[in-house]
Amino acid sequence: SPVVRRLNGADDLNIVVNSGQAAGQNVFHYHVHLIPRKTGDGFDIPLPYAGSAMPDRTHLDAMAVRIIAELRDPVRQQIARRLAVMSA
Image (tube, rainbow, N blue to C red; front, side):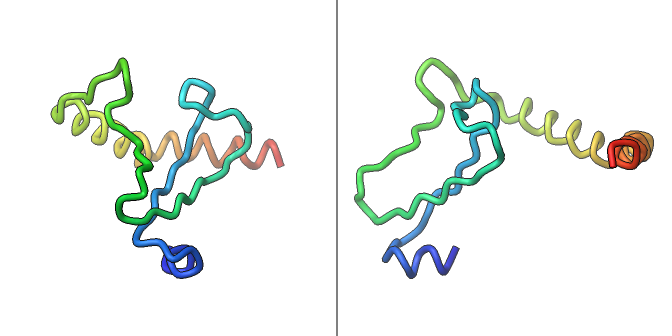
């Protein structure tokens, strides 16, 4: 990000990934948007989005625990490795 800031004369930047159609993705391969920002540039990514609400912090924390547990699950990891070998 220091290179993006320097080359664009930006103060900061937004890093955005839209994953799936419901999230606004319209080019269906993985890509990252780097949006150079300058103070007072008028660009905004409002949160929460119109028609939505920020989840309760307790809900966010509980979801984080579930994601971490899923990623650490050795059975899940073993299955993933086997599927990767089978598809290679």
